[in-house]
Image (cartoon, rainbow, N blue to C red):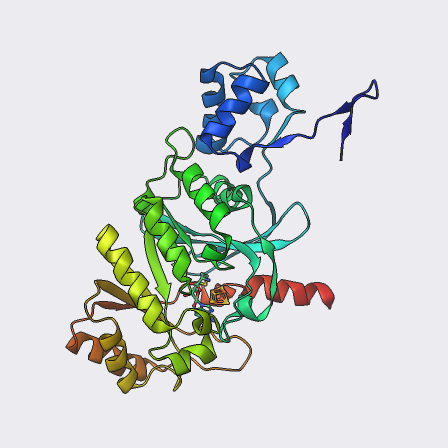
Amino acid sequence: MKYLQSGGNAMEEPIIVLELEYNQWLDLCTEKFGLQRYRTDQICQWIYQKKVFNIADMTNLSKELREDLVYKLLILPPMLVRQEISKDGTRKFLWQLRDGERIESVLLSHGNHMTACLSSQVGCPLACSFCATGQGGFVRNLSAGEIVGQFLAMEKIAGMDINNIVFMGMGEPFLNQEALFKSIRIFNDPKMRGLGARHMTISTSGIVPGIQALIKLQMPVKLSVSLHATNDELRNKLMPVNRQYPLGALVDALREYQTATGDRITIEYVMIDKVNDLVEQAYELATLLNGLSVYVNLIPYNPVEGRFKRSSAGRIKAFSAVLSEMNIEFEIRREKGSDINAACGQLRRRDGKDAKN
Ligand code: SAH
Ligand code: SF4
């Protein structure tokens, strides 16, 4: 789409600012727009610090410059379709992207700290049998700007800084590695959002080359792995990705990551009634993780359309007692936002159904 000036000359398409990392932004502003460096930094401050997404409102730029840039730059965070606030303060956002696709983000608060849970894809191709996103199929990858936009829009709506990011929303982050890493650089850059890499966590279903790429990135971004099963037979059924990257290869990659970074790894383990919550499986889990420095999150399963049930408190307790005995550190995650369908993919799914009814 070309924008027409009143005289009828076709103008260049506007540039989507959130897609650019700092060096690209700087090159654009200095080379194409002839701006001085401090100006490019001022605009960054408006966007990434003050969350002002309209060039016309950037009041320390001259009126002429604003009028010029307004046609050349688009900031365009995602559009809010719906927000739901849980009794425990968890907020869930449904966004619409420029092409009409919809994604979700979640904002979790714990004391003064807030954590944003961001989506990396529209849907997910990995089809885990317990996951609403996985059951809904895959549409496309998000761009770096669409990942960054979720975060900035939430900060604007919340009216405060968000301290942590987890890439734990819809999609498999390592299947969208390029945009993921670019968004991390944008979040991290001191001239842009300036969020420490240690405040970002990637959650993966176990994409081995992604874990290896994270080692090479050499930024202290944290790693969380969705394990959910302790042997290949069960994991193949729950998470088809296990056929491509079986547990042996996954654990080897985790060892590689730990040797390279020294960082503790979080293990996510969704507790599903009589499927993966057996006491024998707790021993199997401890054996599998032997030698790794891990922190296990036991997550009560959030039921998605009837197939599985959540483990009872008693079964979770018995499972966790084995982990204690085996000296594995763990936490039984308090469920957040269950009253608003905070498990990934549920809001979009329900919304899709609402729309069809
Ligand atoms: N694809 C990545 C990140 C997004 S999924 C991954 O799998 O890690 C984020 C987390 O939500 C994963 O640990 C996933 O297993 C978990 N999850 C998915 N569906 C769930 C449900 N119904 N109840 C509880 N956790 C769920
Ligand atoms: Fe995809 Fe993660 Fe859901 Fe599996 S759990 S389908 S990898 S989003």
